[in-house]
Length: 113
Length: 114
Image (cartoon, rainbow over all chains, first blue to last red; front, side, top):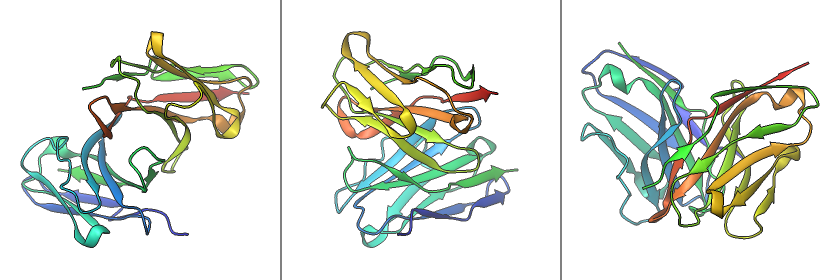
């Protein structure tokens, strides 16, 4: 079946612009994660959605970052007023249960000039 | 909170040699533990996981890891490296206060020499 998809695969933007990153999880997966992977770093947890529960936003680095998940499926990560330090690969993962295997998308490489 | 340490950002072994990739975590509360692998130009995929069953966990491609609570470690091993094992390996550990939240190590790139 189809895996997790993310779009765009690459995004180049200018400092100060807003960007939206999209994640389509595997059908039937109720849990969805966003991570950030900076060059030479591990994955940094950003936000977690589980069904209709309130999302766990404890990993969002600033109020410029927000995410939503519509209809329990597609998720959008929005970064407002982008900064150069936001440059990274943004990964989305979905799973049936939080303790189960996470299936990762290919990521969106964001470059802020 | 939780911290995850992967000793050695780069490890190089000869084909056929033992692979040992180290992972230590900080919390004394037994967490959920995972190893993920990222092959070149591919996304992360699960190698193996520990979720409070047997402490020795077997994964795909001949890899295994042992959960040692006393050492707060979850090292990844493979008896005999293959060229196709060249990849980046990430250890992931759940937050002791929130099992929905995971912390990943910074990764270890494994190079396999012919």
